[in-house]
Length: 111
Length: 114
Image 1 (cartoon, rainbow over the protein chains, first blue to last red):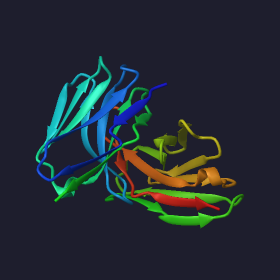
Image 2 (cartoon, chains in turn cyan, purple):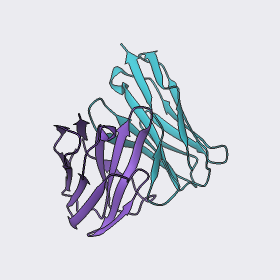
Image 3 (cartoon, rainbow over the protein chains, first blue to last red):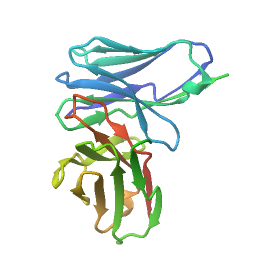
């Protein structure tokens, strides 16, 4: 059974800092990995999708990397802003119709 | 979220009562999903649908049933709600097979079972 772990569970940084969120998974036979953002009381917004054949994806200040063989992904946020404060979740697709989610990292960016 | 609406957004009910949550989409997407989100467990798939009248179980389907009689509507029913089903429920849609496209999520339905 696939297990997805996100460390740290919570992170607080000052504005402007570059930061890295980590995601690890136990079964490397994946189709893809997605990073989502969730604001309090809201649904999930997809940020980046990395196919299993890709090493990284970039969108603006966000860069996600994937090392399938080691079962790891990182989400890099450059020049963090208070508006980046949210919970970030990674999800792995390795069984066709099921995403397995990590527990999330709750990020607080202080002005 | 644009194109996907969940109702009700909040519901408080008593143990043993039936509850139905509705997911309505205007995107004409083929695939629809119901997840629940709980502290310490992340999001877990309850049921999903790959077309009208075509549904299948997810990881935590016990105590839940679903129906999809139209492309745009996916209903999640708790026949007899229990306190363990207190959770936030999210509907998601996709226009391509899982793995080929991202999911779009609704805003969630918060259910409290007393």
